[in-house]
Length: 187
Ligand code: PNS
Image (cartoon, rainbow, N blue to C red):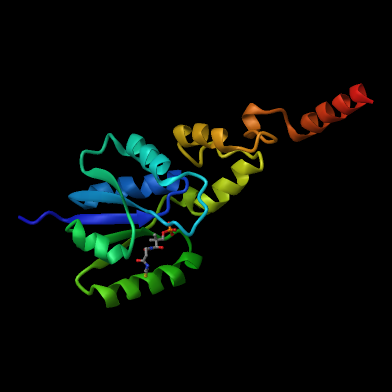
C-alpha cells in the first residue's frame, strides 16, 4: 500500500510551540511527515538553516514517522521529489487565510495532484509567530511557554549582549539603575 506522505514546509526561524503542535497533529494523520525548512538566501535569518534543522531534529526525534529536511526551489517540486501527496500548513487566525489560500491555489495550479491540508494549532498558540518570538526575545522579553526550552536557550545565545531574556536578566528598571550607578561612579 502507498504511504501517505506529507511535507510541512516553512521557515521555522525559530521553531515555536505552535509549529510543534502542528507537527504532533500531522504525525497522527500522515504515515510520514517531512518537516521541510526552506533554504532562502534572500532572507537574513536569525538562525541559519543548519541551526534550525538541528533544533527541529532534536525536538521531533521521538516521532518515528517525522523527519527533518531542507529544500530550495518550489515547495511543490520538493514535495513531488520526496513522494508526498500533501502539503501541511497551519492556519492560526482568519488573517492567515488569505495568504494561505493564495499559496494553496498557486501550488494546486502548479501541481494539481498535490493537496494542501490545513490544520489549526491549539488556541493558546493562535497569536504566536516566529517573527514575534524573534522580536520579543531580541528586545529582552520572555518567550517562556511559546518556544521549547532548547529554542529559548539558543535564542539567548543570539541576543544582543545589551539584552538578555527577562528571566535571566535584571528587570529593565534595575538595568537602567545599574547603568546610572556605573555612570555616577565614572563621573
Ligand atoms: O514559514 P513560512 O515563511 O510561512 O513558509 C512559507 C513557505 C516556505 C511555505 C513558502 O514561502 C514557500 O513555499 N516557499 C518556497 C517557494 C515556493 O514554492 N513559492 C511559491 C509558493 S505558492
